Length: 181
Image (cartoon, rainbow, N blue to C red; front, side, top):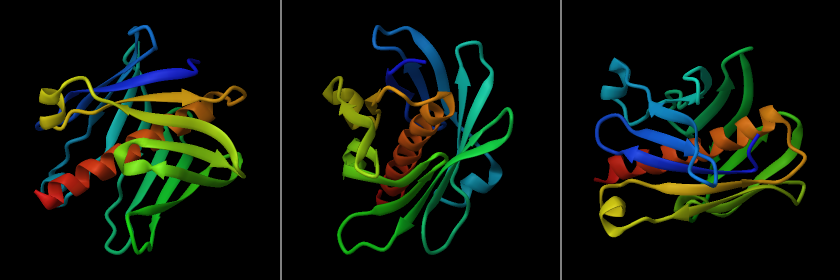
């Protein structure tokens, strides 16, 4: 389990794809937007995550909802819900209630929709996510990269939940971009 990963969006038009890399650039896995007929009529999507051997390991789902956005992170085998984000009412910006298996009172602190934030549980940091921009062209094309630093002491499922939450927040940003433009 890597304590630091970089998620690089490799394709932003059509079906988004991502490379998940170690700090030295070694490929740890990939992620891709799912494409279903229902996605064509609503501004949401799902993401599937694969390990370096190509095995499907995680699914991040954006179920259809009308009032508050929800995102669910599922481990594929054995099937298990690892995390859930539910949008809550906020006067300024977007805030989420976050549930992660094994951690009470999880909070997103910082500028989540700029991809600079910390996940905490009862004030204890779990992970830090920071946006990385590798050129104006990539930024204008909507391609994002971000570095995820995971605190020591988290098990494999908690690592997966952190990665899933980072991808869910990216899904929300992409959804808002589509709705505004």
